Every structure is written in structure tokens, then in C-alpha cells.
Image (tube, rainbow, N blue to C red; front, side, top):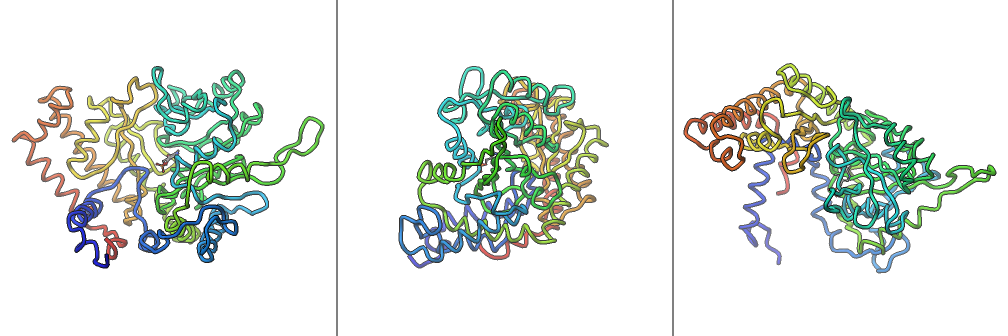
Length: 460
Ligand SMILES: *Cc1c(COP(=O)(O)O)cnc(C)c1O
């Protein structure tokens, strides 16, 4: 019981060590990933994981929560401070285990089964938990329990078609509109979302999961002035541990037809939906790690970090454009770049695969208009993790060059393999390509090695 992991379970220790090495050696460009600080790893590995604390601070179902209460309250305070909110207008629940459960809790709190929701369609850059379904299947539980009608981007501009959304909302009469993205590189027009929600007496839920670090740093517009509820994950640009947060409004909502005030009454509903509605005991080690992430998010260093994330994404986008790649929406305002792979003759899956072979981790993604989620035409590249490692715009030129060389190599492989993925994967390992794959991978790794992950000194 007392021996450390490397002695008690060498098999698992070895796997974790290898994963750690993978994270260090390659270029981590998955837009939703990041490296957390050692202070957060310490919280996650702390005794707080031993404690049950169902309920809210001061109203627990278990004893022994003197310090847990203080930790959760600290986290709540810092969450409001991180986004410059005051406790008259906003409250926060810090217990959701992650982003999807946070969203489900909001729906559970504010909707009845089969009520109507509208979120950005998944192929257009939305998230599963915003009601995703296909014509033959309800995929996300949020489309099983609620009636979902997605809104979409305009195929020409590749931007959200707000006029269409307004028109559909007038017909569909949703109870809730969700403003949030997982693969969309432009800022959202929260004021327009608010207008459309208001016109239909719908709640506006802004899910800033991907961009909350940029919002905290003031690098992009904040959803708070326009939203009834704001959810976020804490592990993407916010650079904390995996978890979710729900911010809800308090006080005055709007005036009714007779000018009488309508007050918000969503606080208790949201808290009750998280627990006992959907969850049991809060993960206190995670809440502590979120608290310290939120403290860091208030520092000038974090602001500079967030600014650099965006500068890097813009630099990556223009470097790829100079090499002839088509960037969806022609650029980016945020931390990600979405590349249309079709002109190269490859698809997103093959591009992702070749880059993985040379130790660049990113993901294929559907583009607006894609017929099948299994054969997407886009590649999503993110800069948050590279920026944590200290890379700047000049380094993005090098990264763009690696990506370009990888893609060009894949195009030559494709000429030999034909379009079947199985053949493509095989031919990469043919004699004529192996040396090139290996040497490109070595170059990528040598480059990545120049940017240590300081967090990796301690811990496992
Ligand atoms: C990542 C993401 C989530 C869900 O986060 P998980 O922690 O993976 O459940 C929710 N909404 C959006 C918009 C996201 O991008």
C-alpha cells in the first residue's frame, strides 16, 4: 500500500512514462489540449480525492468538510474573479466533472424532456453535447432527451448564418439557444445570439469551452454580458485540469409586458441538477486544481500567454496560406486553424494519419457541407499547447513547414496506394517512403526538444 507506482505497478508506470515521453517529444496541436502546471498536478494527486462532500459548501450530506468547504468557496470566488463577474449578477457551480456533464446539467435544470434546443450543427463546428443527431440516429443524449434543431454556417462565407438562425428560431420556437463551438475559428456574435434568444423567450446558453482562456485574458469578446448561462471546460485554453463550470445569472432578468421585473430563478435549479440530479460527490482534487488554474488565469503572464496563442494561430494560418493551403474562413481570431484538405487530394483522415507518423498530433474534422463524419475534409490545428511550451510566431513558420512536408509526402504515398485508407497506411511503411517518414519525424522531435515542458520535471 505504501510503495510508489513504479514499484507497486511497474507495468502501468511504464505506460504512463511512455505517454509522458510522447507528449514531450512531439508537437501537440489538438486544439482542445494543453499542458497543466505542476501546481495543478499536485492538487490532482492530493488527499482531496479521498473525501466525500455531496451538497454545497455549508450544506453537506457528510461531515468533515471544514477544509473542503473553504476550497470549494475559494474556487467559486476565483471563477467569478477570473471573468470579472460580481456575485450580485452571477453565481457559479464548480462541481461538474467535465464540459459535457455541465451542459447536460443546464438542460436538466432549465428544460423539460422534449423541450426544443438549437445549437451549431456538429459538422459545422458545434459540439456533440449541443444536440447532435443524424438523419437516421440520435447520437448525443442531448438529442434523445430534447428535440434538437441545429443551425448552420453559410456555405459561402463559412460563418454562422445568423439570419437563418433567426428565421428558424421563429418557426421552431426553441426553449434554449446554445452559442458555442469546437471547430470554428471566428469570434461569435453574442449580442446577435441574445437578440434572437430574447425574441423567442429562449434562454441563451453560451458554451465557451474552447475559448474560455482567451475570454479570461480579454483577448476575445466575452459571452457574459449577453448570456443567461455560461458553461466551460477548464482544460482547454484555460489551461487547468479536466473539469466543467456552470455560471448562472442572478437578479433581474427583464421586464414583462406591463413593465414588471422578471427575476432569474435558475440558481437553485442548476445547483440541484448537478447534485443530486446528475452527479454524486464532487471531485475535490479536481476543484482544487481548478481553483489554482483560475488564480493563474488572473496573472499578467496568463494574459500574455493567451495573446501569444492567438498570434501563433494567426502566424500558422498565414504560413500555411503562403504554402498554398486553403484556410476555412480565410484565417482565425482564436487558437485554432481549420485547413481544407480537399485541394491536396487527401482527406482529413489521411492528413491526420501522416502527421501522427511524424509526431504531430492534430485531428481530422468535418467541414461545413461534408456528407459523412467518417470521411471529413478538414484538419483542425491548435496552438494552446505549443504556446505553453514557449513557441512564438517564428516557430509557427517551422511548424507550418513540417506540416506541409508531411502532407506533400502523403500526396506521394497516395499516388502509390490509391484512396483506400488501409492501403495508404500500409504504403507509408513501404521501403521507398520509410526513410523519409523517419527523418521527418526525427526533425520534428529535435525541434520539439528545444521547447521543454517545465511541468514535466516533477511528478509522473
Ligand atoms: C470540449 C467541449 C465540451 C465538452 O467537454 P468534455 O470535457 O470533453 O466533456 C463541451 N462543449 C464544447 C463547445 C467543447 O468544445
